[in-house]
Image (cartoon, rainbow, N blue to C red; front, top):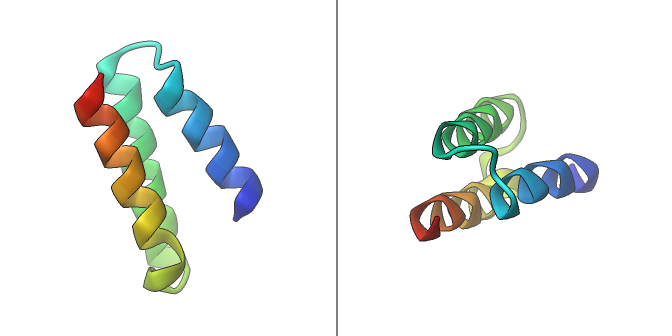
Length: 54
């Protein structure tokens, strides 16, 4: 999970476009469905915050 979080974080910090940032968030939400919700929900929230800041 930590490795995936780093990749997604980098995508948010230096997004190719706003759309790629949203795609990263969608991918994280999909991962969240495959794992226990509490493991990923904070991460997804911080990614959403990063998207809003762009």
